[in-house]
Length: 276
Image (tube, rainbow, N blue to C red; front, top):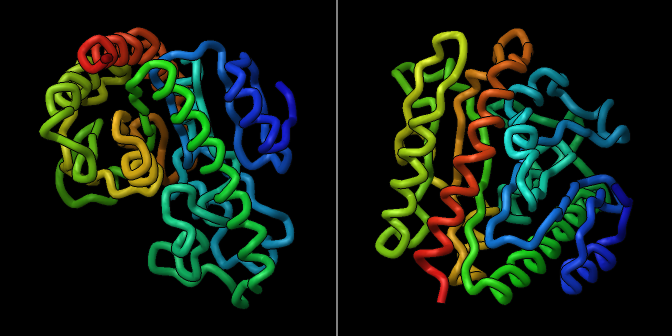
């Protein structure tokens, strides 16, 4: 893996180079093993938190972890194109627009002892901006090369705080073209429903049951690229103990192993249907 500037990363994408990189400021990683018409994204995988913010933050490391999406990168690590955030969403949230990306409060609790200075906010927002410059270059390249693209936008959610039964997998589709892509959404839902998990974990997959696909990553790509479908794919945190902060690696591995075949199968199906 190389440490590269944003300009270098974009240049390599434009030249269709194969590379693994971390951004110069260590805010995100991108690996490209092959240029294929699909991308995996894990924007909330990161837990890094800038040290100059530590003393001012009222939320504990556990409270931050609880609202992040740990292991979502590892679930899709085998796929040819993967972009993932390294920083905690508590510093800036890649899945929210720039004007909302730096929180004052988070999940009902004040985040900072003292309000952040404008300089502190801008430091974080620059990382947010850089990420989207690369996303734009990457989707542009794939749409130009293939005419069509699909993005698997991987997330997780805390299922134990719901007061009703919720699905293992949820697809959020309220901001995509369902008339055009509805059949491929349903195909992806069925594939997710077929995944078998250890430890007698119940396996269900539903659409717009818990979340609706309102994230900025999806909205940004959908607004700027007319031939790219973003599938906001949420797994309930059945792969960990939400309250004890324990990861279940056998569950993560089961998800990753089955997505290794199911995800490219779906991407190939999507490409063959919508190319040209």
